[in-house]
Image (cartoon, rainbow over all chains, first blue to last red; front, side):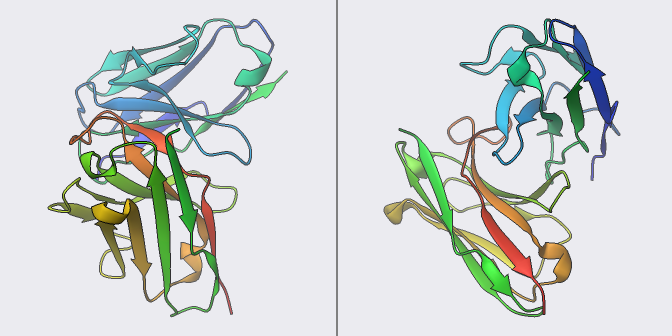
Length: 107
Length: 122
C-alpha cells in the first residue's frame, strides 16, 4: 500500500495568513493526488484533484502543486471558514490511501 | 440535486453483522464508481472499498477483506456494504461517496453522503 504523510499535523494561523500543507507519498503517484477539507461534524469536501486542478465551486485562494512524491496545498489568504482539517489522498492505486490530516486552527 | 443518503448504521455486538445502504439521486448512478470510506471517532479518513460502475471490479482494504462485501443495484440507484464478523475497530462513521468522473476512479471523490454511524460494542 502507498503511505501518505502530511506535515504539519496541525498549525495555528491568523485570518489573512498564507498557509502551506505538504503531503508526501511513499512511492511515485504521478499527479494522482487529491485534497479534501473537512469541517467538524461534516463530510469531507473535495478541494483539488489531479494535484493542481481546482474543484468546481472552490475559491481560487486554494491551489495545489507537485508531482511524483511531493505535493503541496496552499491557501493564499486564510479566511474564517477555512479553519478545518485537510487531507490528501492518492488515487494512483487501491487502496486509495489518505494522509493523517492537518488541522488548521485559529491563532 | 446530487445526493447520497446512507442508512443502516447502529449498535452491533462483536462478531455480528450489519448491512449499510446508500441511496443516490440527482445523477446517473450507473455511470459512476462508488466507494465506502470510514472515519473512527476522532481519527482520520480510512478508505474501505470501491465498486466499478457496472460491478465488474471491486477492491477492499486489507483490514476488511473477507469480512465486508460491497455491491450495487443500478436499477435501484443504490449502493450497499455488507459487514460481517464485526470488530470493535470497525466502529466509525461510514460515508458513501462517488468517484468524480464517470467510469473512472482516478480523480478523487466529489460527492459524499452525510455518513451513518456503526458502533461495535458488547
